Image 1: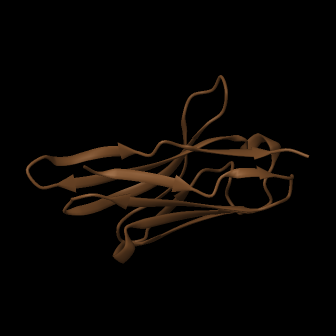
Image 2: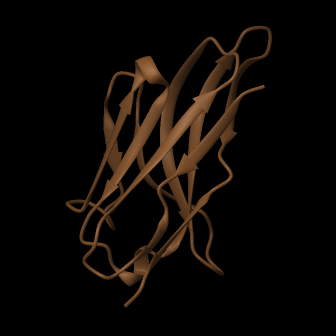
Length: 120
């Protein structure tokens, strides 16, 4: 069974930093694109950043210049470094990955989410 587990969320003051991590476990063939989404109360889930298996990255305009995304393919992990955090960054952050499972094919998997709260 494939699982994605996030860690690193918490409470931080405006201007502070957090590093989110996502680890994939289970039996699978390969991981394709990975990404971080977030969902604030009363708002739809939105893409924050993504990274391909080859390392190509995308950052939403709302976090450009404050956030970086990385992955370590050998460890099946992905990270999101967030700096200069703002109250509007407050949300539940979800890890997502396109994973190929032998006999099943490519499917999209989600983590359980980790809360990020930016407040003084």
